[in-house]
Length: 105
Image (cartoon, rainbow, N blue to C red; front, side, top):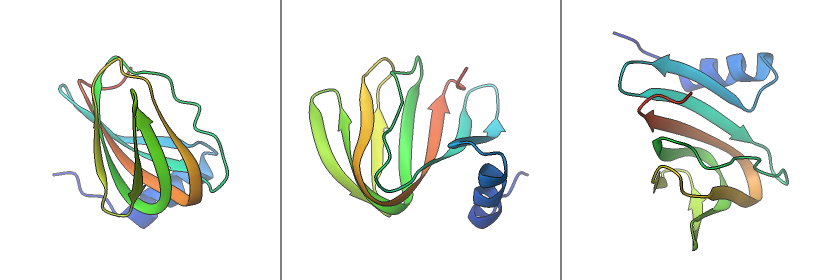
């Protein structure tokens, strides 16, 4: 079994000075923690994998393809592989769990 605590993952991500920390990588999926602080810009480009975002904390908008919605703690967003998407109007520090299938990169 692999078990994780969000506060420990956030500390590890911050210690490595990165916006993204992958903490699970298996044959069919990977899982990571993505962080964007309030007022920052999301540099993402479309991925070759399907992905699911689960917002753990914060507030922002996300545009997936031509659709935009507001997200906050508890929001879940599915992004099909190859679809342009970005978080924007980040009004509170955003912490998002990301599941890629198949694994990212």
